[in-house]
Length: 210
Image (tube, rainbow, N blue to C red; front, side, top):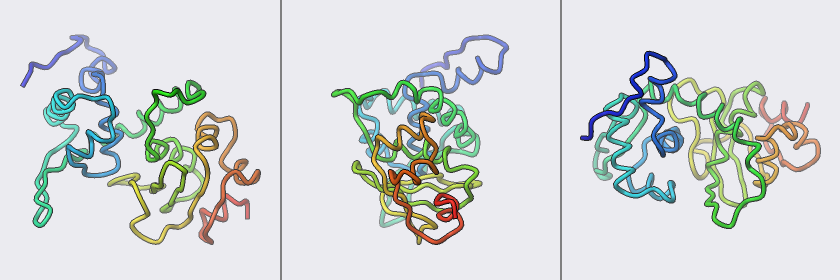
């Protein structure tokens, strides 16, 4: 294992960047916020990262107490990586970075990769304060779910919700980006019929203004 690089500064920000400042590390955290992931799944959802770099980042994250590696029981018997409680504490850091970077999401470039679940964290941030619950989201790019108010465990996941959702949202990536940028609130998007809300739970009614 390569020696740990450090800024050698007695500063909490510098110490944090010692652990997560390398290229790709925070994006690996983004993927692991969805729960345990196999190496092959991580590589598929981090287009552009080399196998050597991904392996190195995962080893660094294990060393720094941000992630662990374990073997699934049969019949899976595959190794997965997952965040430790300290790694999960990076959720608000990623959300703050996403909010700061949202204005840079202008027209999608031809070279831009996209995954539906990359919209999960900004949408989760916009749903906070509307009530807790499981939300299923449909975009043209795919579907995912978010757990609003989740105290522990995965905060989002790919595909259909694992249980009956409290509400379902159908919208397009343009609307999701506008909400993330603060150009309109989620309630405004619902009122303008840019978001279709299904469900009769507290969260669904709050978004519809009922």
